[in-house]
Length: 310
Image 1: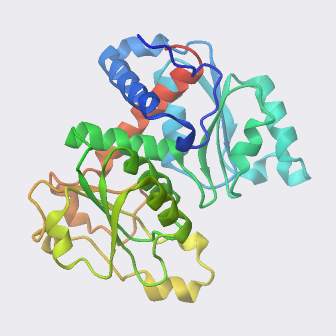
Image 2 (image 1 turned 90 degrees about the vertical axis):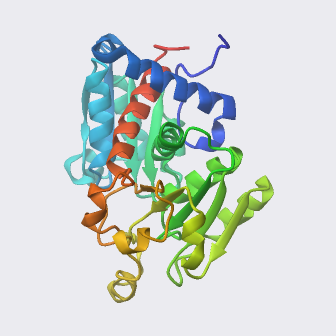
C-alpha cells in the first residue's frame, strides 16, 4: 500500500491535502467503521485537547466522541472565559502549554488564520475545527464522505448550495474541494449573501463547472444534492440586516416536489428555519446521517495524525 505522511501532521486546510490523500482518508473511514468495537483500542492512552474559543455543539462533541470511541481521553475548554486567555494569555502560550498535556489538539477560534498560527507553536498535531468565516476542513471532509457514501460517484454529480454563501465557511471550503472531483455546482443565495469573489476566482482557476442563480426555478429539478446553510447571524453587521433576510428561503415538501425523487438534502447544522421539520421524515433528509459520517471522518483523522494508520 502506498505510504502517506499523516503521522504528526496538522490538518488546517483541505487545500493542503492531495486528492489521493483524501481518497486514502475515506478508505480509513471505511476501515474504522468495519472494525466496529475493535476500534476502541486504536488510540488507547492518547489524549485529545479540545480548544474551543467559539461556541460549538456538533464539532466539539463529535471530536470528543471520536476520541472516546477510539479508546482515548479528552481534556479542554468550550469557552475562552474559562481559560487564562481571560487573563491576557496569548494564543502561542496557550498552545505551547496544552501541547505538554496532550497528544493531539482540535481547535476552533473566531479569528481567521488562528489554526495555522497555532500549528506553528505546537509540537503535536493541530486539527482546525473552524477559524472564523475562513475554513472548516473536518466538516468539509465529512461532507465529501457523506456524498461518497450516499451518491457513490462524485464525478458529474450536480450539487446545489442554498443559503448564506457569503459567511458560510463550510461552503467556502467544500466547493473548492468538490471542484477537484468534477462536481457541477449551482449557487442560490439571498441578495447580498452571494459566494465571495475570491472563492469564485479560485473555482475559475481550477476550471470548475459552476453557475449562480437568482432563483431556484427549474434548476432544482437538475440537482442530485442540495446543501443548505443557515444565515450566520453572528457574522452579520447588524440585527436589522439579519431580520430582513432570515425568512428569505426554506426547504419544505412543496419545494421538493419539484426535485428529483432521490435528491439528497444536506446541512452542516445547526439549522433554523431554512429546512422545515416536515422534511426530516423523508428519505431525502441526509443531514443527521451527515453528522454521523462527520464523526467517522474525525475518528479517521485523529487515527491518521497519531500514526495509527499509515
